[in-house]
Amino acid sequence: MMNTIEKLRVELGERAYEILVGPQLIESAGNEILPLLRRRQVVIVSDETVAGNYLAPLRDSLSAVGIAHHAVLLPSGEETKDLDHFGRLAEDILAIGIERGTMLVALGGGVVGDVTGFAAATLLRGIDFVQIPTTLLAQVDSSVGGKTGINTRIGKNLIGAFYQPRLVLADTETLTSLPRRELLAGYAEIVKYGLIRDAAFFSWLEAEGGSVCALAPAALRRAVMTSCAMKAEIVAGDEREEGDRALLNFGHTFGHALETETGFSSRLLHGEAVALGMVLAFDFAARLGLAAAAVVAVGLSTAPAQAYDGRYQGSGYGSYDHGWDQHQWRERAWHQREWRAHHRWYPRYGYGY
Image 1 (cartoon, helix red, strand yellow):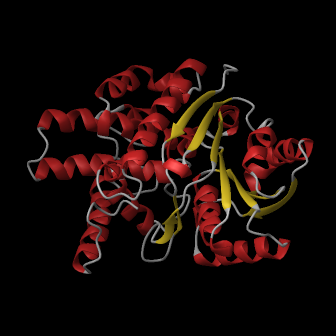
Image 2 (cartoon, one colour):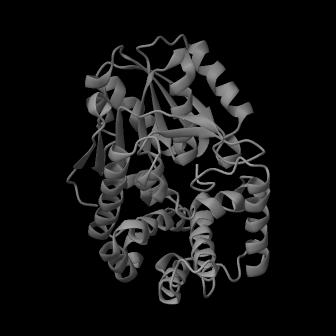
Image 3 (cartoon, one colour):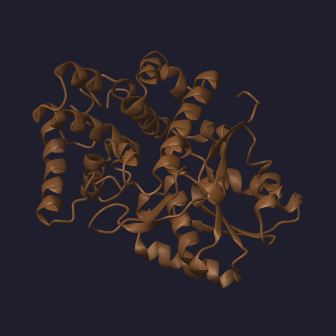
């Protein structure tokens, strides 16, 4: 990995914050966090898997600059992102004896970041938090922009808040510990940025997607920085999703329906659902006459579908290893979508919370 740390800024006036991207940021986290503290106390929230790799160096970094720290660990997986686990997390954090100057630190992937952010938004009516994303998906998407929340049996992210972090530290060295499946799930979100707003980036990904997923330093840096820069620009212009920010939900309308149908489990990772959802969205647009056949063809042959080592075939969802064929995936997604439309709370821009 290249050693240079690159910076971006999410421009939100008094609530603006920086995104730092590069290696060894966990080791230097204490120095980055210290100037933001109102009280020298942080509570680290992580999951059992991530903690085994990165909790100790983060603790060392905080101790080195005199920051008192505590840790609360969650079980790994999307199943953790529910009311029961959130309630226990809140109680555990409060039992530590926090004050409004205490900061939460989310060390983990999208689940940990979403749950920790929601805890920060609600505990003591709002305390500061920092994101330290350790998955590719979290680094390029979920850690930036202030969407926090938890799932319910009705659907994904239906309880939550817009609540911005004070800082995002995207340590690219953490990606080397990820299973290939997790990397590829994160890559789907990277491709989304090319499809919604940057044709040149999409073309570059068609050529260099393999290098990104292999964590080649130059390709990875460009992919992460381009994705974060695009999201930062969109969020700065539309923080609460009243306009252009809805573009970031591309693939999520159908994808969240599939996640709901599979029980928010490891059967279908979020990035995998988004990849399938983008394919289904293109298909839907073609049926409505809103996308030319040539555009749909590009969408169906993009790199994520080819990257999944045979689990997605052809169009990207033709034969998936969870036992559903193309027709079944589509029918499941349509069932969820039509149910929500019938019950009149289907969101204006699609089920893409």
